[in-house]
Image: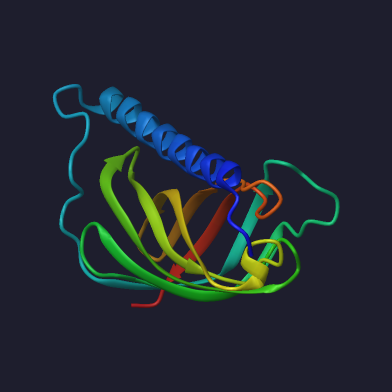
Length: 175
């Protein structure tokens, strides 16, 4: 596959814009809650193991035939107050199975949840690297209660390769 500098520039610009949006929202929401400490590290918490049944995606560019219900099976293991490891499989928006392996870094407490980024490797998208593995980085917000949690991930669009979406992942705590 040939390298397209224009596409690479667009991809990085979109990801950085998404990260800036999450950072701006985090700072704004935190400032509303406590002006003296707009961004604070999350308090220490117990380790936890969560399972999920995939994602529900609201696509930015709603192309006909895209799958919104991205059903699958995944696991997330919270390692400490900011880091978690994640892995799973789901049916992606192109109706092809995708696998992912990655980590969450969520250092900021905002509106009763945590905000940060999700990074790792993913595969299964026919227009992105012929369905092979590729690195991914996306802004994420997480809300967790006793037994139920929600991850909200902004998937930036990559022209002619990956559809942009806001993906919702409901998760259940099993440990």
